[in-house]
Amino acid sequence: MALKQISSNKCFGGLQKVFEHDSVELNCKMKFAVYLPPKAETGKCPALYWLSGLTGTEQNFISKSGYHQAASEHGLVVIAPDTSPCGCNIKGEDESWDFGTGAGFYVDATEDPWKTNYRMYSYITEELPKLINANFPVDPQRTSIFGHSMGGHGALICALKNPGKYKSVSAFAPICNPLLCRWGKKAFSGYLGTDQSKWKAYDATHLVKSYPGSQLDILIDQGKDDQFLLDGQLLPDNFIAACTEKKIPVVFRLQDGYDHSYYFIATFITDHIRHHAKYLNA
Image (cartoon, rainbow, N blue to C red):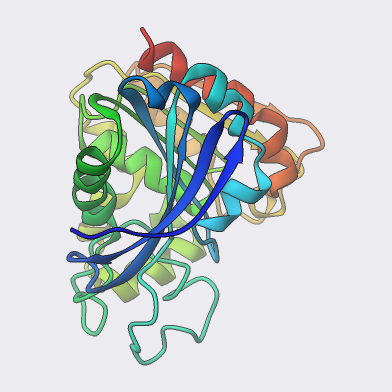
């Protein structure tokens, strides 16, 4: 599968690159960012996938989070895809910021007109890793995943639906229980239809309840002054309760004074890179 390089910039001794390719799952052209640390010049490195939130693209994380220094030091290849298919010309895809373009919610849609393109779950867990493993110096056995908001939801469900696939998972202000929040209800009813039993397959709080218990260490940071937390969109307490019941280790840190923005992410990004490096470099 041909990759077209869009950009390459030296950063902390490594290279931040952006590529474009034709996605089979999504039936459109997709961009993704990949950071190659200095260690990638001499050998295979672990792969860490970042999933961005609503309205995000492959650019947000690489330009705003300040993750490069830690990724360079720990020798991690970091991959940041887009958040939805792009330019599919589906009626209504650009009408709202929390559904359609920039809002793929990391599910495989089953409803018309979305099901042909909106297959972000399969793209993230199958197509993209195959592409990365074939074209970059990564060790496929050492993979982890993290994300923010809608992408935090994505990271949690990818890890919980695939025991053993990811060595670790973390999230910033994830949408923890989409069945019960407005964002989730809108996205899931559009992509998955009205049968709410189908929604549970993409809800971290429900997935935890049936998780078979292969080792998974979860780190979550949440800003205490996050307007979406106060607005009932994120519902971390429900997820924490489910993890506690299943005895799944989760470190949940409520960070005083922080909001939902990349200023919050940038503050704690090094902790998250360290969290993953502990398992990826073990």
